[in-house]
Length: 392
View (cartoon, rainbow, N blue to C red):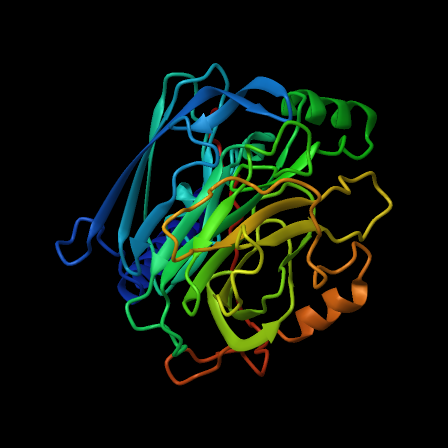
């Protein structure tokens, strides 16, 4: 008995010693430090009556917005998001792609890093964005709530962009999916029978399906640009299940960032973007206004990679050139509509492969690519597995 107690005490003090060494080597950053700007946000998870495709239903939202509010911060900021749950079900929020450096409790996955936020409860996510800049996203991380609870997370860099093109404006482009049915019922049916989920009824751009779907000509994104200007499109795929192709008629896109990491710029006729992924591209409005509408179709549709049922439809919006007449039409033109000739077919694996192979780290002096070239074999490591006992 004495020997066992002595051994336990020895292990305890050894663990305590290791914790002390760790804290000395990696001091905890203080979010209360006056040198770190603090950005406060209020998220209210609540129902909102929304109509799309001739169907009206109660949609889960943040602050009644669909998509949710955009978070805009600067690199190095401390972020504090107070989330209040105003619905009769649990919820959490996940900050997709944010490196939670010793703030794992702010990551958001329910029952993994935190208990869900119950009805009428409030939880404040508190984390600092360190050495990251670019476009990411946030979304609900409980059941299928992220079908409608999502938004852009934009981090402005401390240093100038590593590309020379002057940017006229930053334009978030968020892809999503719309189900006419209740998404909880869709998820429950999938779980019950073990097959793939029922396909969504539409894809959306910034929450709008576009005129190729029923009753949706009024629910169409119209993005105004000026000829000769360059724009940074911050593209986010918040769709649950599908990789998507995206293209703008008669325009090329220059990829400069993937998942908040700068890339070697390359020009492409279209992009392929996976669920949860973000891609920043430069678009130069170098075309003539074209017809009397001055509009060019921008379209997204799925990249087919499986035999499971999927939504094989296409969502479109319009890039509208600002005219000099002073008369602006901010409504979708009348049909018929022609898809961009540069939009890849749904089964175009060759394009998807070619696009992916062009992605390279910027690997500059300011943004090096520090990839270990050798793997060092660990020796004499001690592990103490521990089961977290968090009562939810």
